[in-house]
Image (tube, rainbow, N blue to C red; front, side):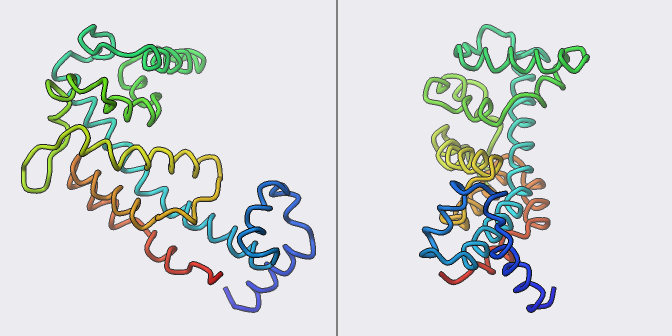
Length: 222
């Protein structure tokens, strides 16, 4: 897109009051970051959209790899309906998440099957299986889901430490919140690293299709 055309788009955003569609409260944060300069605030808002979009691919692949590796290991240990096995010792919150997923499936007029239930569970559910309370589950079963590149195993903390902020970042992106001021290169690298621990093939696929580096390289000068 020609530079003049881009400038016209941002200038029209200023003159036509685009901030009202975005919401004044949401846009005010961008105005604060640009010392009240509307034109630059819209540039920053657009940049936030682009990097959020660019992070979707590595988040997508990581979430799929995490839930499917955990499901494979749990199914091997407890059977296809692993989520009903008492040995899991799920918390009340986790049981509620499972119940909500079942209700969503039924609401869609479908039968509750393990594959559908796995797909309906949130990223928060899967990361909760790495909480301190799940240390025994990790030691006995879930440790088989991930491995370092050198073949050595991982501790629960080793896997959970980068995943928790990634989950928060994912949710902020999903709710269209500002994320540009985070250390996104670090989180992007962590997404690829955790994915590699779960599935080297998935990590290579994610890295090939991710355009985060290009998007981040166009960060506006504030």
